[in-house]
Image (cartoon, rainbow, N blue to C red; front, side, top):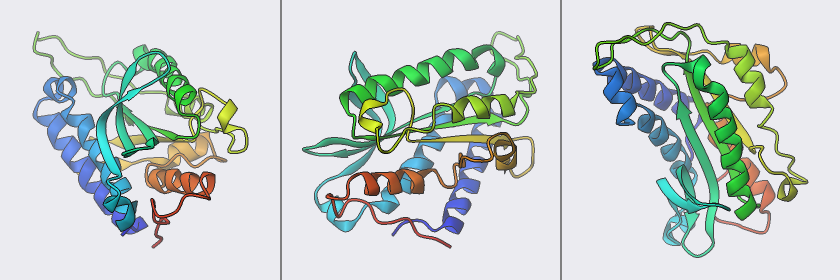
Length: 243
């Protein structure tokens, strides 16, 4: 059964606690090994799995992490994908976090994110595409193995929210001809310094009041778009639950 809103929030709270523990144990190892971000991958993957119908499971439709997908120019390891055994990718989602050097690298990653969308959408124009991005509320310095320290930062979250909103509105009528913009985007700002990490969706809402960019609605939004785009397809995703 699909997660309810309250179940999703509870799962996300557990996910953030795990991410906090992994990062605080060894920040550099957490980033280099991808153990930190893979916890975030798993949350999205499990949310998607909860929406698969029993019929979809019988047909061997799978939610795959680190799926090797052939784009228009090269293969890409897509972070979370829903794949049909004969029809290929149905839904593709990228996932990223930055826990240091946010201001230095955010524009380069922004360009990469757009390029990734173009490559996948050229090859799979009907596929529902999403992206989930996570930033810390504050970047707190941590010591690297070479005994140097990362820099403290106060990221400009409002600016970044507006940037991501600009590539989060793929037109559902003209989507087959629109490249570089995602069907849905989730931008999460998390205070990892709190004893229990806190999600600050209010910062995003203030910057982009007319667009839902919450991770707590991300998978339901993706599923709803798939179902409305593919009215002739039945029995893959259950409708999102409420409550």
